[in-house]
Length: 215
Image (cartoon, rainbow, N blue to C red; front, side, top):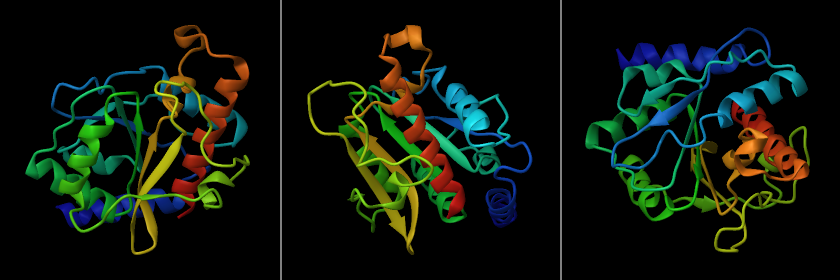
């Protein structure tokens, strides 16, 4: 069954970007962390991409459990939160199969997730370390030009960092840290960010989607 699902995912990611409607999803995980944080973020990014990139992504962005076979229905899955994350052995296996089969996971630390997600990703790919992406990486140079990640919220004042897990030359998982991109995607009244900050966040998000579907 997993083999069949992988093939479906492969053809979805290779043929429908910008052509027919498909869905993105938000990852639901265990451990007590607020996987449901930033509920307006991904829908707003979808709207931005449909207007500015000419995509036809469905506006509904459902939650999908990390261990569910439904994960394979979505070519791109977004994950965020502030706290604890726990992947069971079966969760890790399902996520690993999804990513190796062509799926893409973008994790955005919403402040407080970092020390947990790094441990859990080791369960998914114990033989692959996250590496920091250089400023000349293609993900920063899609429709919009960036010199690394934009800084949307300060938090600890550290520089924004983009990490990736790369398998056989393909970036399968992007982890954005100390930037709060998904806060910048939310409705403007949620965080009262300056318009230029929201634009930076949405444009970087659009780059991530463009890159994810071009691999």
